[in-house]
Image (cartoon, rainbow, N blue to C red):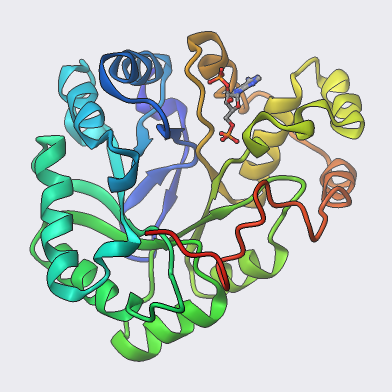
Length: 281
Ligand code: A2P
């Protein structure tokens, strides 16, 4: 499969990202590299990592060992909450890059806003400067609420290119998606499959899946795509990795999109991690 098989989103900074990527949480060491290389050979072009996943080295190794040219691959990582202070953020971004052994990263996000700590504007300034220095091509945020993004724009004049949030049919994030769209920010979905919870046995999704001879997972990922959301499903299994990319040969109807929307629920988060309260370091 070539890059051309996966459509791309154009970001507000003019760069592009594939409409679906590969989550690498808990893929570490040699086994992690093997999973990521399998994913690349199945057609994935975007690898989503984080400083806190402790696998930036494995991600870099997979990219360097792959036969796919560097400029057709996209590597994302994230700044942890304990390094939001400007000077520490600058060093941490540099460290992320050195750990991958690559010349640049494609996307760098602030992992959590940690509003009680109140340093995310400093962190954002460090990302802006890292982008100017060419260490990272695009910059964005993760788990940011509208009020946090408003603050970034007001304080720095720079809007994120991407906001990566928890988003699945049980937690559809209508308001956040509308806010992101208004600011030309691509919404990215972490745990798009609800981390393989009850969602993957949902009866309504099963009915739709049967209609298309697809799996529930493919229905969920197609739903993300039709919403304009960049999902990053994780799978350590090459067969499931492949299956999770087979989304572009069918389309959900408006009625089916509406039926999936009705599954949305206020308590639909996996671990109740509300970014207004929850902090990660
Ligand atoms: P595995 O790695 O064994 O394939 P999320 O991306 O929402 O965090 O979910 C990741 C979980 O979903 C992992 O446990 C992964 O298991 C599982 N998963 C990924 N793809 C599929 C699939 N096509 N069918 C069933 N489970 C899947």
